[in-house]
Length: 132
Image (tube, rainbow, N blue to C red; front, side):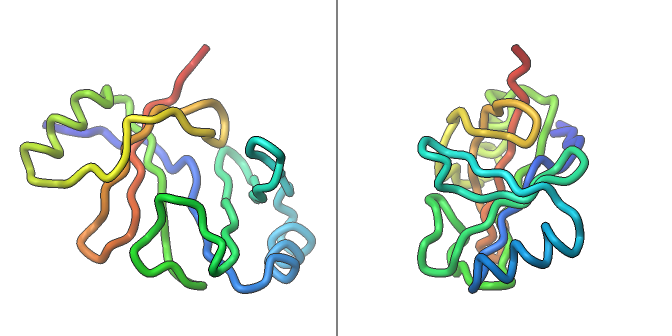
């Protein structure tokens, strides 16, 4: 089976200082500053068709990497393979699905996601775009 990953939707950076991070990515690199979530309490940096979500160290959003810290990773991969097929494939290969399927906020549109971990404990989100 080929999962057919086609692009990166977003990645999460665990950071130590939100203002310094926004300054670098928004003011220096020119990424768009975006607030989202139920009360716009979350912060992201958008560029092209991708975004970087920011989590302050000690205030991470669940689920997250096993050892989140500045410099760690949490990635989302977009696939055209239906999530049901991905779940079946991961189970056959003894990969534990930690969460999902659930609807989430992607960079361009809502996404339907499952979460698992790579061998190092990084959180890997695999998603289908929900085109409405």
